[in-house]
View 1 (tube, helix red, strand yellow):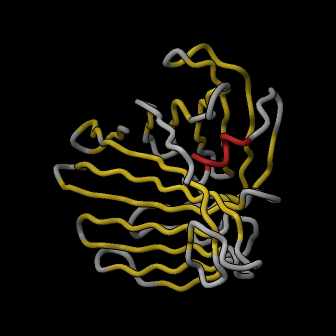
View 2 (tube, rainbow, N blue to C red):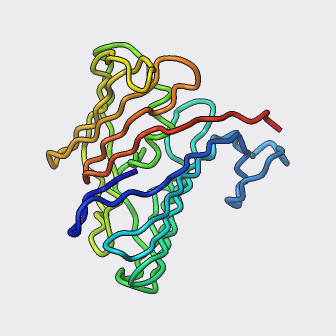
Length: 224
């Protein structure tokens, strides 16, 4: 992953891990079903660590999406460790309306807010969600998009966005890919190239804030 900062380009290593789990009513994720109310989910962890402006940081974001029915975000948790402190954000979309909580030891004010739209989409959940989109030119979805934001500038009101499958792209890293865009009402666009074969990983992602993700390797372990 790379992003451009004041001192120039910063490079970091990231990892995306997706596994099948069950979400219990109390919010715990477990490997085996414990009751009829447990929800079969895809649990995705997006982890990155590195330096920005010579300051170390680490971010871990966990998204939970149902494996069956409407493929909408159930919950997203994010922990950021770096200057000026540690912050934790929890977006719970199972409650009506969705609820966002922020606790911080640094630059952000503690908040407990409700969101006005459902379902809610986030940039982090797209790393799993876009892999399941129909791969055909012209396919579109109109969604409400939650801008997770940076330190001290999180937007609490989701904005309108359009997800579009544009066209098949030339080979990227020897993989045939589909070009997908996410256009938000504020004029910002995120771009994704999703592999047309295999596990449909995201080969390249150019996010609205200028961050670029590029696939280096992929592996699959035998399911438990």
